[in-house]
Every structure is written in structure tokens, then in C-alpha cells.
Length: 57
Image 1 (cartoon, rainbow, N blue to C red):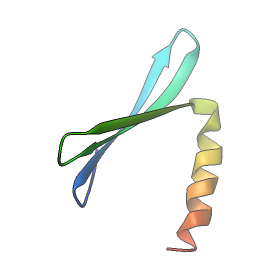
Image 2 (image 1 turned 30 degrees about the horizontal axis):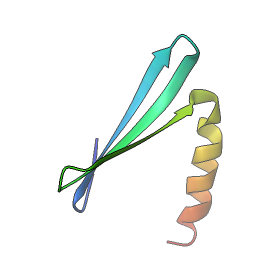
Image 3 (image 1 turned 90 degrees about the horizontal axis):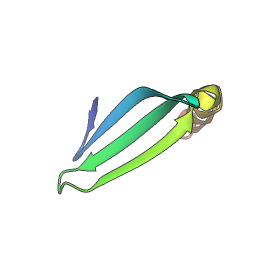
Image 4 (image 1 turned 180 degrees about the vertical axis):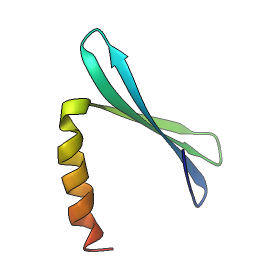
């Protein structure tokens, strides 16, 4: 769980019949919830993307 400003992020590793996947959910202070999911084999691509964005922050 990550608390950032007025939002809370939940990062979970799940498993289904198709394999493992990540579920990232964001809940705003007002209660609105948004979720994205991606396959575990794509994790390295997400990490690379976040690392490249870090240079610009």
C-alpha cells in the first residue's frame, strides 16, 4: 500500500488460470477507485518505463 497525497495505491500480485498478473488500484479521498492489470511477464517493461521517467522528475 502506498499513501500519496490524497490517494491510496494498492499493488497486488494475483494468479488466475492464465498465470500471474499484477493489479494496481488507486482510490481517491472521494472514494473513486481505478484499477489496471498487467501480466507478470510485463513487469520488467513497467520498471524500465518508471526508471526512465525518474530522470525527468
